Length: 108
View 1: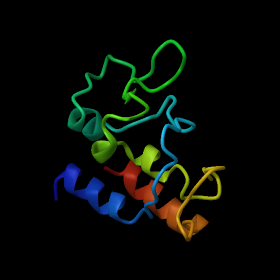
View 2: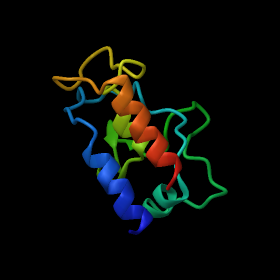
View 3: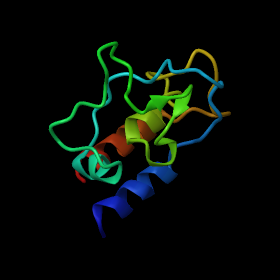
View 4: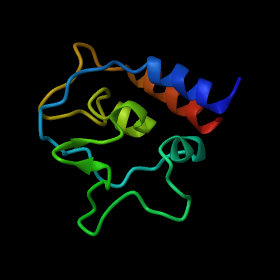
């Protein structure tokens, strides 16, 4: 299975919710895999944050790569460690679910 397909399987395990319009609380420095960088067309030598430490993809009060956002962006708001103070899914991932997703992610 291709890395991009394995990533999609992990993405599908993460609960979704609708962010508060205009919020960018989670839009800072984010680590991402080579596969994720390639999906969004980001060269490995380019950092995805600007001088204010805001993600370069946060434009016009929204995420310009929302459908292709990295795993860590998807996890924000869905775990106890990365709980969003404004919104979140009905049910957070358990610590075991989060650990399993991260362990599989690092193997891609």
